[in-house]
Image (cartoon, rainbow, N blue to C red; front, side, top):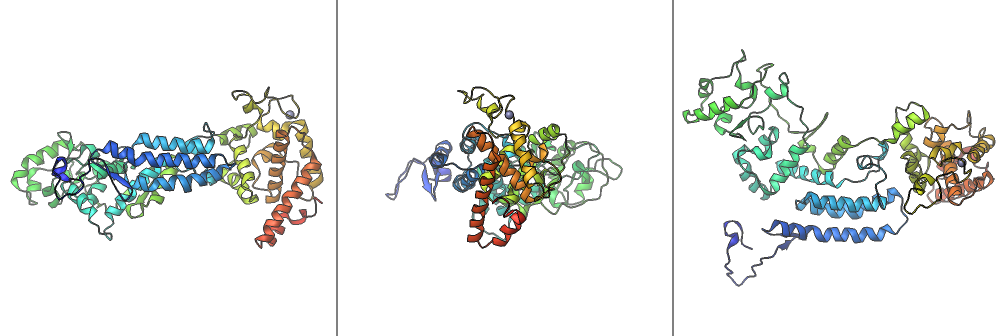
Length: 508
Ligand SMILES: [Zn+2]
C-alpha cells in the first residue's frame, strides 16, 4: 500500500502485491477508506459476540452469572478492538444493546446508570462499553506522556503537537480540540477529544481564580480570529498565566513589559491581538503558582495523569455517573423508616449466603423487579387472569402483600416466630421492612432464614400451593444438609457450625 503523499499512486513496481482493499495487520484492518476499514473491523467481532451470547442465553443463569459472561466473553473481546480502532458511537450503541438484551432477555428492568454501579451501592457491576472506550483512550494519553516508555509511535504525535507546545503543556491548558491553532487529526484527535469531554470544569466567574490562574495558551476562552493561540516566543519570555497579563493595579501590561523580556519586535501585532483577546477578569493576586501536575478532574475528584490507567479512570467515571436505585426512596416512604446506610442492606445477602440464586432473589426484591401477578397480568399475552394474590385471591399481589400482608403468609411468619423466635433470640415478630429488606442489626442466621422463608413463599406461589410451615422446615433442613456437604468438602466445618449455631438440631 502506498503511504503519505504517494497514497494515490497507481504504480505497481517490484512485482509486489499492491492492494486497493483494506489490509489486515495484527488483527486490524487498515485503509485510507476509513468507513470500509471500520466496518470490517467491527462487523466480525459484533457477529461473534452475538453468536457467543446466543449460546449462553439458553442457560438458566443468575444476573451475576450473566454479567460474568458479559465481562469474560463480551468486554474482553472488545477491549483489543477499542484500544486499536476508533469505533463509532453507532457501533458502540449496537454493542451495548446486544449486552443489555443478553442481561435482561428483553426490556431493561433497572436503569442503566444504576446497573453499572458496584454491588455495594445496589448496582450490578454491569460493564459500560462507552466508559470502557473512554478509559482506554485516556490510558493511551498516560502511555504517551510516560517518559520511561520510549517508542517510535510517539515521534509522530510529538511532531503534530510541537506547534502547540507539546503534550505536557497542552494537557494543562483549557483547550477545545476544534479551536486549536493547528489541526489535530486521527487517533490523537480522538484521544484529546475524550480528555476534554471527561474533564468537568468549574464554570468561571469574575471572582473565580480559575480564570486568572489558567494558562493563556491553547485556551478556548482566549481566541484570536476564532482560534486559541500558542506563541513560543512569549512562552520563552516566561508568559504563561492570564494573571501575568495584569499589573498589580489591575491594568493590563504594556508592550514594553514583554519586549524587555526579550520578545522580538516582529511580534508586536501578536501582542496586541493577545491583549485584546484576554477577557476582563478580577485579579485576586498576581503571584504565580506553577501548575506542576497534570490532573484529570471528575467533578469533586481528580486523578493524577500517571495514575490514569484504564481501570482507575473507569471506576472514577462510573462513580461520577452512577445513579442510586430509585427503590431506596420507594421503600423509605413505604415503610416510613429512616435508612442512612443502604450499603449494609445490599451486602446482607452476600454475608448470609453463598447461594448465588438466593442472592439474586434478594437483589430482585430490593429493586422491585421480582415478577408477581401484577407483572404477569400486564404481559402480552397475559400469563394470569388477574393481578390478585395467588394465595388469598383478595388483594393485588404486590411484593409487600405477597411476603408480609397476605393472611396465609402472616400465619407462616407467626409459626416462624413461635417455633424459632426464642432459639434465634428474636425480640419480636419480624416487621414488614425486616422481611422485605433484611435487617443488618440482627444475626446473619435470622436474615438467612427470613430470606429462605421469602423464597419458600415464592416457590409456593409459583407452584400454586399455600405456604406450609412443615414443608418449610424440611426445606431449611435440605439447605442445611447441602451447606454441610459443601463445608465438609472445603474443610470449613467450623464456619458452618458457627453460622448455624444452636439451630443445627432444631429442624430435626
Ligand atoms: Zn394474599
